[in-house]
Image (cartoon, rainbow, N blue to C red; front, side, top):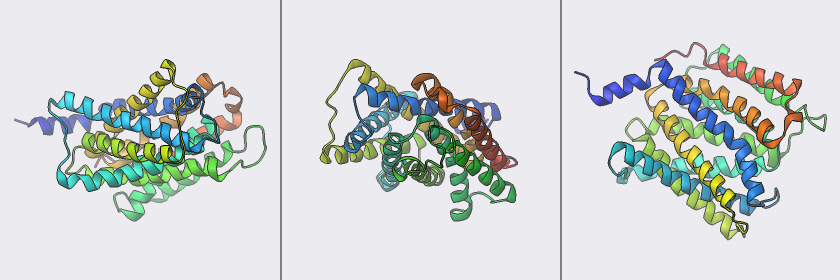
Length: 314
């Protein structure tokens, strides 16, 4: 007779289950690209209001953490409370996964297009595998994976050749910050895999969001950030952004706990796909979705596929 934990583990390792839950995560994350832009518009936050952007991000993640803890507690029918020994891990994850990743992401997104941001974010798969392979020895780095990384990088370069200016279009506070956010994400993914071996991934996700969100909100407020324009539509968008983070990161953390990092991250190719489509639909960035951007997206997806092909289920 198999225990409930063993049955749950076997279910979460089944290909159809990994595929379904990972695609739900990617669809939610893909919607974040245009929804953050819309959130800026609803709260009347301009691209030069860095402090207010940080405050906005902090509020979103405090909400995300509270929602993750609430939903997790309801599903497990008990209050999710960290052990004393868990707080060091939670704070370390909050620094990587929330403070650094989203500090760079929010500021970067204000200085680039949703389409560009979504495709550059696709690089997080490559970076996560490089970190797991070279620094943490969680994956084998093969020539096929290196080729995949190069093809993906070619896609990132290609998408920067599109748009109104025919140049690389790389700025430190735009595309550069988005890339730095993916580095922080890569390290957080590896640490989630490491920490979740003996920790509940929902507890890790929820409490690190609250801790990181409070830090970001405090920093933004002390820097002079204010949310002066409050509307029902703006609050609804903020709640949705919190909800998508709570659900996506909790599900992703659970999948990484029970599967190899590469098996889960292979589905990350849907992030740029969803981001490009939803940015075009919701933001009207249809001019950015041309032949060059389509080719770039194909290269990114091909690179991710090559990196993860043959990773195996063990």
